[in-house]
Image (cartoon, rainbow, N blue to C red; front, side):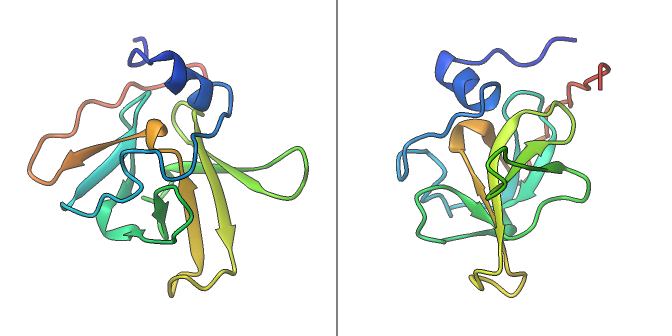
Length: 133
C-alpha cells in the first residue's frame, strides 16, 4: 500500500523535517471538537483532542500521545528531541519537557501539516502500515 498523497509543503515538513511558520497552521488555534488527530501520511492515530492545550507557541501542542504512537529521536544538534510517527516515521515536530504548561509537564509541538483531525463519531481511516520498518 502507498501512503496518502501529500502536497509539496506537506512533503517538505513530513519527509524532509521542515517546520511550518508559527501561528500559520490550521490546528494551532483549534479547540472546537472532540476527536482524534491522525498522521496525515499514514492515518495512524497520534493524539486525542483532549490532550491538546494552548501553549502559545504557534503550533498545536499536546501533553500526551496515544501509547506507542510516536518515536523520539535526538536532533543532530543534541538540543531538541524530534518526534516522528511510529508507523511511517514521518516528521511531526518536537517534544519538550520541564516547561510546566500542564500537570504532565510535556509539550508535543506538532506541525499542523503533519496531522489531520477526525471528529468523534466519524470512522477513523484505515492505517496504512509501513511494512519496510
